[in-house]
Image (spheres, helix red, strand yellow):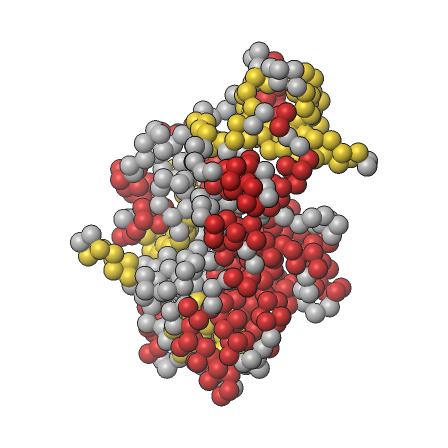
Length: 572
């Protein structure tokens, strides 16, 4: 087991006063403060925030210009092509723009690049194809901010180009200053532009697309109800693209999850049913680990067009078939991922890679679409930045996943001369590179890496050291006020020391569920469950007189009976 550094959050506030004012337990007040929600306005928005409080779409730089242009093109009957991306965010944003523009009477079609044949974003062949097809206007979503040359070419051929994106804006350094390099599009809607006044800089691509449709619907005088039809879609993409669940994002996801069980979208209805979730409370976890991977899987192993067809489906039988196909493709993806992870771990453990602070793992025979998932698994195992590269048709391609102390996008920017193309965020990136430059990239990233041992030690931040005896059903119910949990609004972590495992049973085909009876030093007993490798956990429990554990409290409901239990997260 990796050595972890446990710390207790020590943020201060008047927890009793906050609890009294908002009618919550002081523990809940402490958890809210630990998420840097501090003043009354922020606390009120966190507990009671609604879609009415979200910023106006008109605050985006270039929103007025984009709406004017699209309104004109719709009126003139000019053909518009949406160019999206093959992941969940790209597919959902493509569908939002397609449905929204179709509703307004636009002549519109879509093109989602093929991950392997086309690669990410707009390339010159896509512009050539659009010209050949007589397209007047290209509208991007979840891409385009880095396509300066391609957009310049489209403009030189007389096309109108509107970019909607949320990725980092490319830059060049002039001394210490970062100078933005924006594409020469007719309008660029991306909150990450330095001079964009929109307050939420961490929207996903689909939420940016939703904001554009919202502004268009307002201009056309359509009702609030119609504008809000896209909220569950924006919510799915926000979680699926791992955006921070703070402020506007958290409100969108909270509201989207509320609507999702009764969604109007036939494809989503059938995908929920195909995954056995129709009678369950759907949480951000289900989007991140059940629904989202199905929507992503087709873009990985087949074509993302399948996921778009699912969202577009207007017939229940067709939607059910497409949903079943996506579930099957996702099962196949899981098997291939497990093989890739095993191969990558063996490579790290048996070569000099294990000494690197930035892992650059080249798996030539791995399906290139799985590189990002495998990089994520390696990042979890070794807690360091990871790039997984695979052999593509024309070059080596790869994806990276990072740790909090390392901006992968900036690190790659310092090595840009070695790559054909790259882009992404601080925590994730994608790239293409010539095969002979792979060792050079590994060498340069590691030479320039400033990560310390401290940075590479996984940290467990405990919200509250709370004895089991304090756990009550009403407190567990109040914890639901903090949902949805995810990046930027993590699930609370509680801790208890001096815990003995009295007796235990192991379940699951992979022996990865331990049910047990726990007892604290003062004799308080509690049911517990641990999901993970059972053998090391039980070995540690038998060797030590007592364990310290981190946990999350839940109500276990079984055959009409309810009892309190703790789900153990970490132990030592």
